[in-house]
Image (cartoon, rainbow, N blue to C red; front, side, top):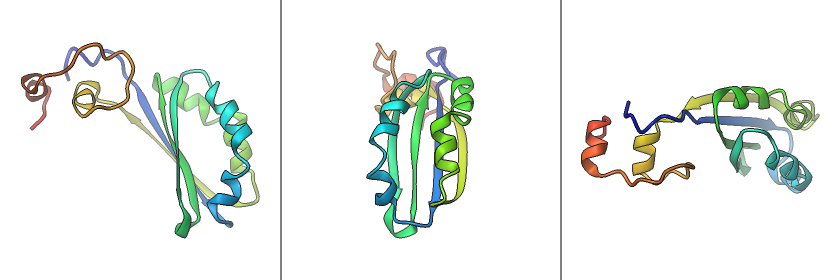
Length: 126
């Protein structure tokens, strides 16, 4: 790993299998989005859904693994898990390789430097 990867961001992927189409829950999610936006350590969230599969979820970028893990016990997440329209939930945590992600324009904070191709090759890029 490159020296420039000092910060270890974490991506949390949450998936919810539903009994109803995702738009039913998404239509009522504005207040939840406002609460989620204030979660400690959260940098951003992308809302995702697959209408035909009756699934919804999110991709979250957290400042670190600890805040991502703590979010799994947040009241908003618990409310979704306990919703009768939710059949099952899945979560995965992923660490971010920052130097290569910077090369591919990942929306990560604290990137003041642009990585050159030689830097990418030294960091393990092809």
